[in-house]
Amino acid sequence: AQKITQTQPGMFVQEKEAVTLDCTYDTSDPSYGLFWYKQPSSGEMIFLIYQGSYDQQNATEGRYSLNFQKARKSANLVISASQLGDSAMYFCAMRESSGAGSYQLTFGKGTKLSVIP
Amino acid sequence: DAGVTQSPTHLIKTRGQQVTLRCSPKSGHDTVSWYQQALGQGPQFIFQYYEEEERQRGNFPDRFSGHQFPNYSSELNVNALLLGDSALYLCASSVRDRGTGGELFFGEGSRLTVL
Image 1: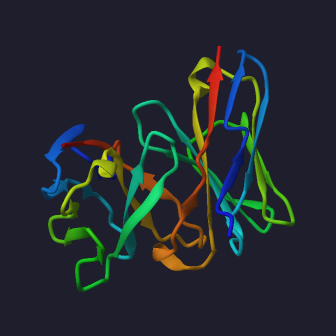
Image 2 (image 1 turned 120 degrees about the vertical axis):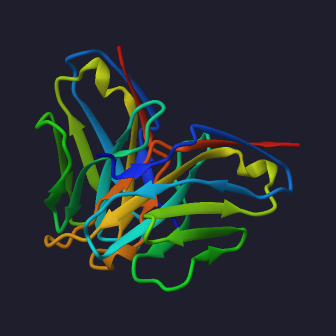
């Protein structure tokens, strides 16, 4: 089974509107972290937002917020007031704890967001 | 403060050749991870280095090997290249023992094309 599922290969949003990018995850580890990264055409993965499994409140970072529904195992990214520069690939990722003390990220397949003027 | 730097940015090899990719982590970071991102896919974890040792490895064959130097920089080596090794190779640095919330900083990647 896939650990991270992003069901939207592509999304369109009008400039200045809000958009939600979906992400569901699968883990049996009680301690994990969820991340969203933005990847423009340059290739660099840009960190957007983080949510820990024990965090009581949804994470927010400027125009980005994470709608964390633990029971549903979903971690959707909400971008408010979309800008043309938001056009990019967006990846949801999960980091699980391990006894070895090292942590790898497992990524979804990504959602391509296009902002329309 | 320089972020994660990778070299080369682009390279073309032929099947059977060997390639070495290089990564300098962000200042203050001691852990380097390598990821392979095939076209249209999310990155996949190759391995992670800390204290000059491979600490964790993903599902990649032994043709993929690495090294970490005392200054924390790292190399990824791929032997006997296959067409399927064509991908963007991303290096990420972090500080170990920050738990599941420790942020990874990525470089812009090295785009490898195997002909």
